[in-house]
Amino acid sequence: MFRLPPIILIAAALAVAGSAHAQGAKELIFGTSHDENSPLFLYASAYLQQLCAEGGQRCTLQRLPGRRAEAMLAAGSIVGEIGRVKDYILKHPDYVRLDEPFVVSRTRIFTRVDKGITSWEALAKNARTVSYKRGVYLYQQRLEAMQPAIQPHDVQSESACLQMVLSARDDACVFDDGGISTDARPLLAEGHSSASVEDLPLYVYLGKDNAALAPTLSDAARRLAARGVPGRLHRKFYEGR
Image 1: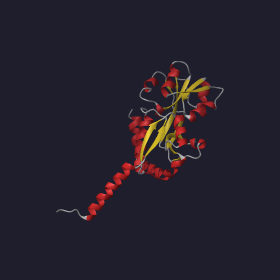
Image 2: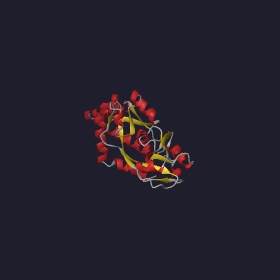
Image 3: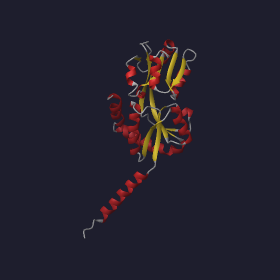
Image 4: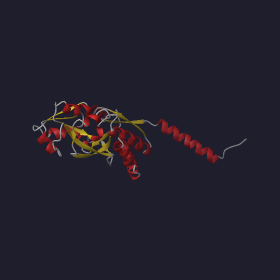
């Protein structure tokens, strides 16, 4: 009877054990407020898969309203959030932010006609009422700081934000260029989008109960960057649309 050499049997056993361990590993759930059909969600989902695989984890990304994701992370119902700005840590000092941003998002202003808005200051001079997507805390901060010169209010989605302007219910809409979904994209052609008024590095955050994962995932992120993975994903999901 033919018998395999012991070294091959040992290697096969280790491979099976490793596969079983990977399949049985707990899936880590991350949240993001971006629409499933937006460039940023597609980019973030693909990036997260590679990041976690590089770090020996299994992860999935869920679309959640911004405030719900914030509450779920605080309660430990999800492991982390993707797409929060650097200063989010000031609001939640018990969270852990991975070292490097995973993408840079551009903040633009949508108006019915070109009003020459090139900065937040110019927005305050050229608009009275301004909408933004609910749950985007940084936009809320920026706009509330400009009161009473402008009257900000939040809406459910980027599509609703653009529609508020096109229906003349608001003078301007603040939006994230990566957050525009396939359904919302045609609306941009009906008005004017400014150049970026603020480039925002976006980060991956972990809740306090999963802070121990940060060194492993930060190292994994550096390895992905060294191999050019973020650039390839950006070209696929942003520039290829």
